[in-house]
Length: 322
Ligand code: F6P
Image 1: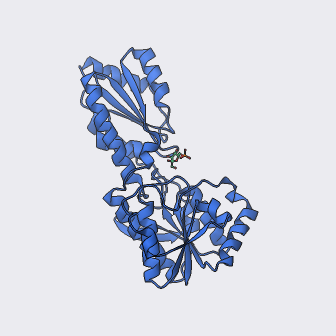
Image 2: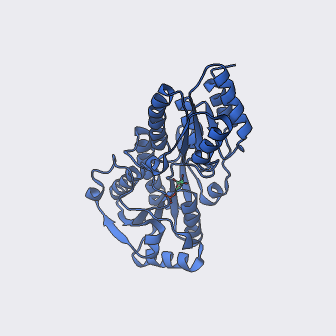
Image 3: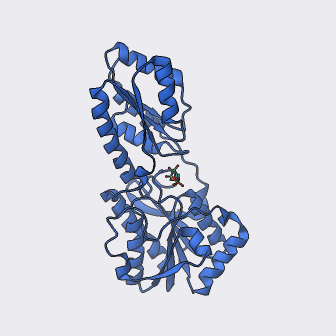
């Protein structure tokens, strides 16, 4: 292949710029021309192409967000829109495409692969909700942002003997809540994979109070419930002093962690190497600290399993009363 294109799609994630930089620099090193597509799949449909050179990606490895911009493109499931995307790539002689994004973007990549565009996906989403890979780009940075918030909130909550509920991102996947709850020592973690039992939560808090523990942190994933609603319910049922913080899009920004720069850079190189060798229709990932790639149809079809053992461990280790 002599000419490839790269786009970022769906919710942005810290580390996407590191991946773009690696795709451009390694692509040029491998003798290829690299085209950037602005605004994700929407930009592909609208032919928003820009030529990339070694300098286009200077000074971005440390920046959150994506220099190519991103957008959600619900209409991409429409076959006419997909055909237009293929035509746009053909017209400028692009022979392979790298899609950096999450499950929705990969379904689009899968459709393009089936239409003959060799496509490689790089997992870019803070949610860590892709089954085929242990980690996704941006998850580590988002977790560190949440941990920083937990630490700060714990200072003030314990000074005032308050209960604090922190709502984190994750619509269908509780990984951010689970990992930050574990790392931040949250007394209660609520995830979408396990139905919330409000009685359980209240009983736990009553037990803590009976043992003289008056301040606790509850981390709730957005897909499992609302921090505001939970705060109101606990105030009403228990009469405690409860505060709620919704972290929201804070979690999507910020300078990428070392881990996310490492993943983004390596996945960028892995994706280019595949296309350079004429191999498309793959997703790159990491398992047991090794980079690997998998068929795009197979990878997209896999269902993420919740780590019940980790959840159990987090609960046991955060429990300070009996
Ligand atoms: O998929 C990543 C994610 O950050 C989710 O955790 C969150 O629910 C969603 O995107 C928010 O999307 P938007 O930025 O479109 O509001």
